[in-house]
Image 1 (cartoon, rainbow, N blue to C red):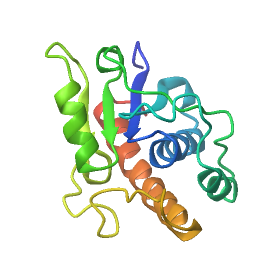
Image 2: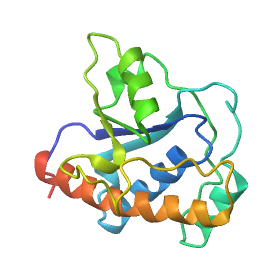
Image 3: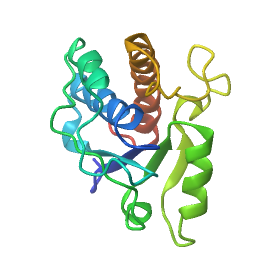
Image 4: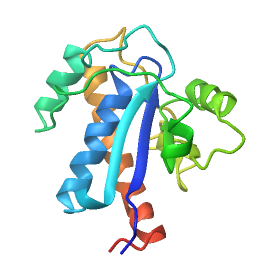
Length: 167
């Protein structure tokens, strides 16, 4: 049994579409396996313009259809402390991955990865290597984001459970 929780941070640009959806999808997968006591899961954005806002209403609606609740979340930005607190930081796309690696302090303990391709999914999920930004799209794109992050969450959780010997 680990002495500390495994800490996971999901990151996109504004923290109102992809990363809160990934946060909730990962929480949902953790809860299905009754492992909530072993994880600390959060989300943040690399941009600052949505701080304090709820997730996009289309993201909330899509998640609600799958019994996932984004209502209590509020957008925040990545902080320098996040790189010392979180074990894993997952970027939703290559640009945010690059931004995170630029922001990362040299003493950081965080393992920063692209969400859909980690740990061994070079081809990504369903042919996607990045979670597409649905902000300027329609509701169907929010459903696609959910499909992708739900599948990736199961794969990533499998790997983390094995690596950290949580089961």
